[in-house]
Amino acid sequence: MRIRLCLAALSLAGGAGLATLSAPPASAAACSDVELVSARGTFEPGTLGFIVGDPVLSALQKKAAGKSLSSYKVNYPADLSPTSAAQGNLDLVNHVKSQAAACPNQKFVLVGYSQGANVVDNSIGISSAGAVVGSPIVATLPAAVEPKVSAVLLFGNPIRALGKSVTGTYQSRTLDLCAKGDPCLRERRG
Image (cartoon, rainbow, N blue to C red):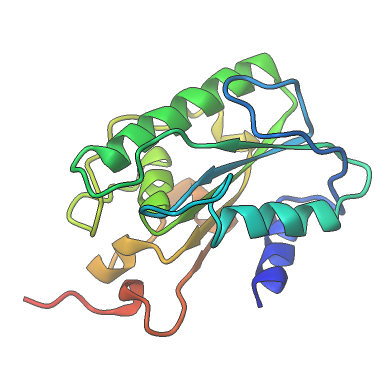
């Protein structure tokens, strides 16, 4: 199931494939055709996130053909502190802006799982304030970077429990998935 979703993401990214791989950079990396920017879930281990980020990268690597792929792990605590998602929001925006300036032809796939989905939501201008492990927006990707974002992949997105979803300019490039029983499918009560 996860692999099929990743393949759908690959088609959203507009590529028949992606090829040369590199380790997740700590700062602006050498230019690749596509960079996977992943915000892991709360307390989630793994390079990009064991549950979603690492498997998405693996699926993209297997489908790679003729394009280079790099990855970036959003640097944030991914814990229950009230500023965790805001720190991730700022790091994602700063990294993508820096990378886009250094690599003008590079495209981005933004991936977020659970709290990481809040990070991505905020970064594309959709507030996660009021959601589980959410926060107000502290930074957004500038309009000049928006065309460089090929796909937004959200898994277990907490804003859905608030009745919210990605709207606006990123909506057509967003895949927002919840598994049966996830809190993102529950309606807000009260």
